[in-house]
Length: 369
Figure 1 (cartoon, one colour):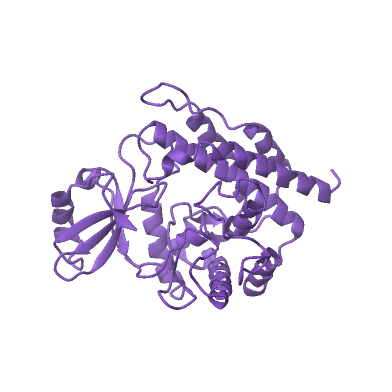
Figure 2 (cartoon, one colour):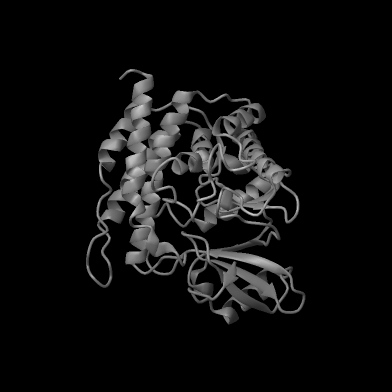
């Protein structure tokens, strides 16, 4: 999945930094860039001498739209803290964090390369029926293990977020990000990205109907294509992309992981990830039902999620993802997009908002509002 470099890195400068600060990394290195990664450019570093592999994650080049996005520093610190607090949690080892933009043009960190399988399609194509079931169960159980970590018990984790009020803060943050992205102009045409339809109205709904507060360590973007599975065994060996991790409500991670089930039932099934034509709940062999996955999570975490909570979480998740796709469109406009597929996301934003309102309507129906 690594290939041509779209955002160049000064290899001589990087090598000099590593030689001085990270002697355990084998030099010299060759560099390739991964095709995935919508937010932060991600590179495969390979030792020319030993063949050892590492992964470098950096902020995009140029002035950034949001102070809350592209937080590779936070990602490094979360991984470092979790490696000490939860040694059984499958996360990559981190080697260094460099906040000096003069080295490669922006802040970066380097982590262990996990030699396993990454699936863009949550249907997990190419595996057996039994493996598909086991891999989804492993994904759910791994999430539950993360949510069982008590941040108040570890000094290194306490600083990653406040112990309550997660969704209220999310509403404020998303509102600010959406407004900034909306006025972003294309560097060539001068055309603004534009506001998300009915976004402000949606934020008012979420403010008035928040679920019962809960708090734990959350990943922030937990989904199948942010997991690394063992090369031959049906189990998770790594969780990637931690820049949105914080102390927050576990419902946000659960809704994000299970969103393909709702997307598969809608006309625009591929509004967030790659093609998911094989992800057919009730028909794809070995794919657990959404309710089965929720029950697995409840058994592993000790929290049984109510249907009303799931509807609310789904609606909020779709609206949040509309801000993410709007942000990708804004980075395309500023020529800062990392992924090779970034230009396909503009049309997905209104579809996600439409789904948010559909699931918000389900919530209203439950409470006869």
